[in-house]
Length: 146
Image 1: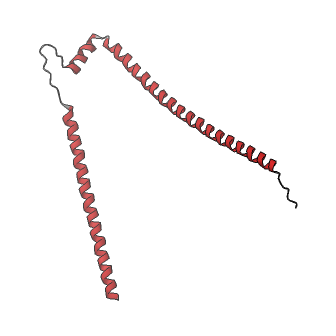
Image 2 (image 1 turned 90 degrees about the vertical axis):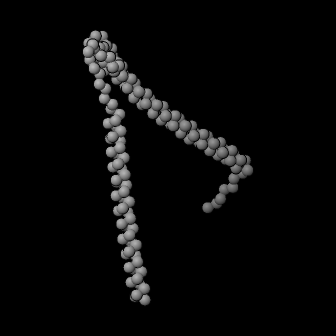
Image 3 (image 1 turned 60 degrees about the vertical axis):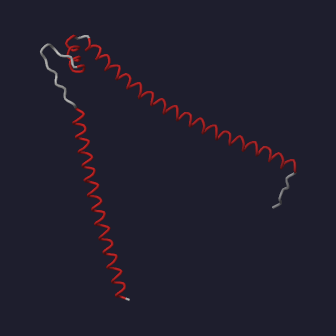
């Protein structure tokens, strides 16, 4: 086959249009990826806002029920006694501290964690001891075999 030679003008034209087309292609790829990332972020933000909206609607329902309850005088009296330690004449208020129960539960959890850590460390030490004894026996048997 005969090879065709390109003129200098054709080479320049090819170089110019090739470079322009590559630059345009790179620009399109970057633009598309930028807009795709922007759309992804906006969709994520939209879902977060929808979650926030549903939570706010739920809180609104709770507050509306609380408003309805606060219209009842008996509820107001009971609420004040429970939350603000108001009492009727002749009543004695005994308040139990719930934080002590929580502290006891936390201590139990911490004690259990400490016990588990001790048991695990003992098991690890036993395994290491066993491995060391086995390796010494193997070394002694190899020395005797020589």
